[in-house]
Image 1 (cartoon, rainbow, N blue to C red):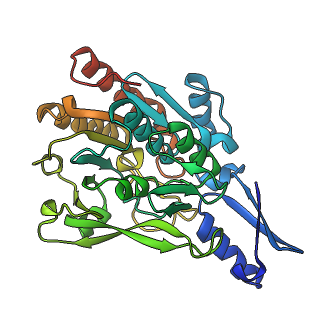
Image 2: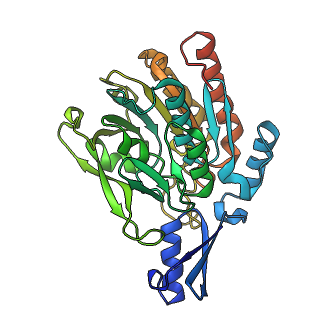
Image 3: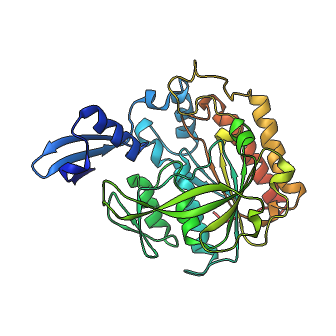
Length: 351
């Protein structure tokens, strides 16, 4: 895709311009060239395996292609598969698509449940700003200009495919749209140790600086609080960070429960860092530990009777974070748990 922007919106110095584009477009590959109207920005998806760092990426893509759909490196952002009881994708941007399907099937158009709980298993908070404009109550894709309607999965899918909604930025539309979203963030690394406890997520406005300068974008800010569970005013959402499975599920409010599993919760060997080999201690537990943690998560959901309340499960493999050599056995274990819970009538069977 090619986008034309005014000359003054990008730095003249090439190095600064590339840094700006890399920050703004994140997981997209963006390059700019001078044209008479200003700058012509070319947007593509990464096509080089080295972008994803993982030396076993080819092995993982072969497994995905054999079991779900033929996928190469360039198609990683488009890879998603839905089956009874769960959605599986390579990138976690597709989580919003799964939530959109749930809204379409289970919530009256533009209705608002009194509360929604998001069980967020991830090595990151995913509170980034999508490349989306917020015009009153309407979301708009800043790359294509198309409207994004949360009750219309096809529009969400289009925004994911364009790159407007990316990895790490899929939560903002839900937290801006709904009044009272409780987020329980389960995390196992130093991130959780430094941020354990109670917080509020504030819905804030971020002004766009490139595709639609001055337009409002849906941003999120996190602040520590003594008692965020009491927060119910529009724009503030209780957010609890923990590495304790029992604490994770304590005192959940009534209402639907949406589970998002980014597999880097179980192992984040690379953390999207090309210098991963030399960069500090790595969160790289072996397969046996990963499988044991999967068992513990599902065991906790079942033991506390939360499993029966789960309305949606979206799982993302996160290439470049969760190692490809663990994809097949770990997903098999998750699928086994889902199948068992469905057979016991303890899990939703919606697709």
